[in-house]
Image (cartoon, rainbow, N blue to C red; front, side, top):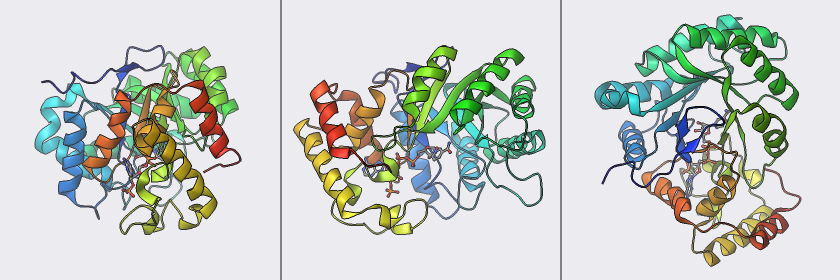
Length: 326
Ligand SMILES: NC(=O)c1ccc[n+]([C@@H]2O[C@H](COP(=O)([O-])OP(=O)(O)OC[C@H]3O[C@@H](n4cnc5c(N)ncnc54)[C@H](OP(=O)(O)O)[C@@H]3O)[C@@H](O)[C@H]2O)c1
């Protein structure tokens, strides 16, 4: 059986790009301090299951750059023969190197960073290059001009923007369109507990035909069974980095347990339910999940076989989570 037999790909906005409903993100668990064998197993495991999209950024690690290096080693050793089957993205815009050019979204930073990323990943080009965040001090024309140049110079096939507030996003999409390099995709945070994107989905992305990749669809692991019985050693919360233990209040855990009961009634895990919820929105081109082991990815992928959510179930989820943002 082929790796493509069980995956139904989604069109990214109104483009010619098809994306797997779940993609693998390399923000955490792929740095220099992580086990390279596990990283390899996850990347190959994902690809073998039909996940063709891998999401990176210049600063993923730790240390920054090392996730791209891990990916680059795997590319060089064994994935190069599959390069044309892979959709690889990277980004620039968060602090990366010292001095005035190592951060934000000026042309100097974006293009120098992309050249560094290509070297680390052993690639001639990336499929998608994102401006990682809006830079309020650089004219949008300059940032979008740099993305346009990245595409025209052959360093990237498509341009994307991430985490831009709605007004800046709307203008950025217009500028890119005028330049002849339409924005392929917007990347933003979206999960049952963080829904701010919903307004943007309908008003900006749908109108412009831009696709949407969503990050942290499992709220960094909170919308899974990971923390229902405490904080396991080695988990993201135990590392006290991007997920703080104080976020896991008793109140939140009570709600998560209620969601878990709903998931069980539906015959799926909490992670699977959280992804069914995200993917119910047809505007979502792909949900970018993280994973620290292959079993988690399989658990997440089981959402693709789950029944659709009924109106009553959606309302029950809203009631369980009302007044919560994470
Ligand atoms: N554009 C941006 O600014 C931005 C920001 C953040 C992320 N991203 C992208 O989005 C990707 C995903 O973000 P994320 O890692 O926060 O996503 P996530 O899918 O919400 O969380 C992933 C974490 O949840 C846990 N997990 C995953 N599946 C599980 C399962 N089935 N059961 C139990 N636990 C499970 C694992 O944590 P443990 O490590 O504890 O096992 C895993 O590392 C990133 O890698 C990156 O590519 C982009």
